[in-house]
Amino acid sequence: MNLSRRQFLVLVPATAVAWQYVLAGTPRDAPNYQLADHWWGMLLDITKCIGCGNCVRACQAENDVPDGYFRTWVERYLRTDWNLTTPEVISPDGGKEGFPTAEEVKDGMYFFVPKMCNHCADSPCTQVCPVGATFITPDGVVLIDQTYCLGCAYCVQACPYGCRYIHPTRHVADKCTLCYHRITKGLTTACCENCPTGARQLVDLKNPNDPIHAFLKTHDVHVLKPEMATGAKAFYNGLDGSVR
Amino acid sequence: MGGVEGYMYPNEINLYWSVLIVVYPYVTGLVAGAFILASLVRIFNVKEVAPTYRLALLTALAFLIVAPLPLLLHLGHPERCFEMYFTPHDTSAMAMFGYVYIWYLMAVLLFEIWLDFRHDIILTARSSKGLKRAFYVLLSLGSNNTSEHSLAVDERAGWIVTLIGIPSAFLLHGYVGFIFGSIKANPWWSSPLMPVVFIFSAMVSGIALVLLVYMFTTRARHREIDMPCVDTIARYLLYIFIIDFVMEMLDLVHRIYVADESFRSINFMVHTKLYFSQIVLQIYIGTLVPLILLGIVQVTRLSPSLRKAIYALSAALIEIAVVSMRWNVVIGGQLFSKSFLGYTTYKIGLITHEGLFMAVFLTLLPLAFLWVLVKILPPWPELKRGMNRVASVTMP
Picture (tube, rainbow over the protein chains, first blue to last red):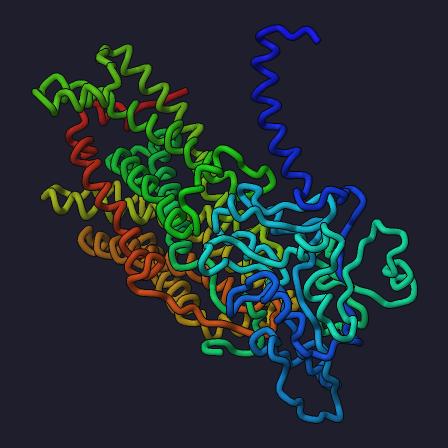
């Protein structure tokens, strides 16, 4: 290859800059992981959730989530027959230690709704980040580069689902990473791993053998706040219309 | 959980944008408003308000210097703020701030002030000695030409800069409104009217501030307040305030009449947590009272001393209204859950770095900057040899 000095001087810094991106795009500890082969999401089955709080505890242990903040949490809804759109909702300490015994109701129903980052394909939080510290990976996970985040909290305001917070000691935005450090090694997330009823299932829409495809054909699955048009990938089975 | 009614998502219980984010749009708005008043003289040839022209420019500069401070103090990592310049995210409304700010500071305000004061700076440099002379020579940027031709060039260039400055002032504050208005997750903010309301309230607050500063400094210097000047400012203040009020009411009435899902939350807040700041302070005391007072002046013949008192009172009340409006937008927008099922409480700190004292300090700090600026560049009309030149200038 014949390179002039001028071309060389242009190429060297360009390669140095590009190399960082090459490295950034490849998870270091997962050499066989191909970003382009996956499109991650989560199936949350309300009909199976028992509100035990295992997922919340597992998430906090796995990801060192500070007390009082939640990457995932569980809500208990009481929807009465007389008021279908304004349910009574509780989530004591994010449902981490379960829920108090419910009073019996004749004209209503209780159900649990696990919540987490929806890893939206068109996420408002990614859109508003002034420096691009929040980004979506090619395999469909919304992540935060905490070494880059300003801590302005604009993303917290932009998330329609209340999934983000400012970490009280790191002073940067924080939220569910879909256990990216685990799923890129072929493991499932901590919350899915610890759910005793299988109410949470990690799904890979690009995997033709993933059971999600059969599930979506046979079940009535919805996303939260579809009117927000965020391309949410937290898929809910048995989602009641009162859930916000 | 203390201070929570109904259900909040657990991450929503604490507010993430504090009172400093109330100060930020307020201070930025004062900049835009003061500049618009100055542009009345230059572009729209409203000669009566010429005595406030230079004071308005310096006021805008003093507040512009402080405008980024509340944002910086609020950031979790202020040391990373320059990333917004070096690696801005092109889809973020906030990423524009750095550029709009620098554009407005360097290309518009500093340039216009320099052009307008260049002659005075050169004359001061010539008549001074030692350090003072060196300082003013530095301010003159080496310019030493005071010929009639050079002054005419200053005028012409200043006119062009002001012409560019008007849309820039709108951009500066319109974009602040857009930061809130474009958040679809928050119905209290999400409105295309938000930038419009922010621009008009900014104009109102800036004009009222310059009116107050002009009356105060003139009184403090034992000079006569120029009545045609303050009458004219008050008239424009009234007109723009009416537009601002109509826009805000249009937004409110639209929300009430449409009464969508979020209305229950908003209605509750306006009647409880925001009742004092929105209904009492912003609408009754801060808007209706000054509108009535300024309206009375237009239709009756009152003595100059009474008019002056009315203007000062109205301007002060208008500042209260605009601060309240910023509070109601920023804090109000975080008091209800995005689930629309509950409400939280803002616990304001007092002497924390995002507390009330810091907010008051940052709001008053520009006045200290203004004091320094008027010492360096006296804006008083009687000192400007060519003041009539500005007043009588009729540019193409």
